[in-house]
Image 1 (cartoon, each protein chain N blue to C red):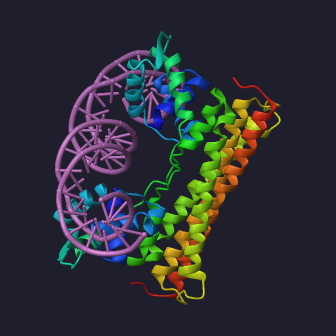
Image 2 (tube, each protein chain N blue to C red):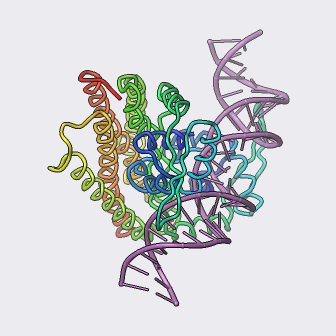
Length: 188
Length: 188
DNA sequence: CGGTTCATGTAACCTGTTACATGATTAA
DNA sequence: TTAATCATGTAACAGGTTACATGAACCG
């Protein structure tokens, strides 16, 4: 149930509404955990009724009112407990790899456009992460020295950067392989 | 519904029983898509009743009989259709990154053992993939030249190798960061 | 007048996980 | 005789996805 924990971390970093959380899950924390607003509202409700979160109604002018959630003491304890439990190292879930192996039973060259599209998406993400790193951690406007929370956010971002960089290089390899197969020969 | 497609690819590569598929999902195809036997049996049953697969009862001596599944024409068509559809580039789902960011609100040093454990698991996977590459693709006993299917399996395996290598390097970075924070200072 | 942003939700469905269950054979 | 391997499944539950729904404000 890592979504709960991701929400606890995000609300500890900064209290906010379901809507705001949904947007954070599109960037920042969303770099390594995704969730839709439907999921978030459902889980927030449960966490509140379980006493992990506090809610505060915030009336706003010219905007709909919002509910601002923050972490209650039992929520903090739950997070701490989870942090001390071991978790399973993740395994990949990679549709594109399934497609690439499946291409042996179809036309490998037909995958070229798809792989090129993924290549563009990952290149864009890489550029976006690098811009964020410059803005928040390594650029002239960034705080120095960083506090522990910022150091940890930075090392997680470096992981995202390493992942995207590795993926772009691998997709180049995939493209070269598909082109070679398309050029030299027939398929099954 | 990528599990269906992963099963189609695996059964095209080699027909087999639910049990055999479950074991393949622990290695080979499991490097980039995981599934348990319960899931596999459920999906096989559905795919068979949808006409995507053929079943053949195979009586065995000194072993329980098994059901050998193979891909029927509509299954092959379904795979081909999926191969020509675009899919969303994946996003990461990485609990460990959630934990690392969460460590700012707990004791960063307490995560050291957990991260070291993940480091060992990924190092082992890397060694395992490299051994497989040598055995199946680059070593003296490997077929040469490779056919299209083998080339594609190899490029997917190279992706797994790149992923594990990147992860091990990143976890070194995480360990150094956690040690630095533990050494220098108090936390929130 | 139409699209985007802010803000919240319900309902149905599909997928994935965990626990339980059976039963034969083979190796230590 | 105990554990592991081969082989198949059911049931309950948790988690994730997709579609539908509402409504104000603001920008062009």
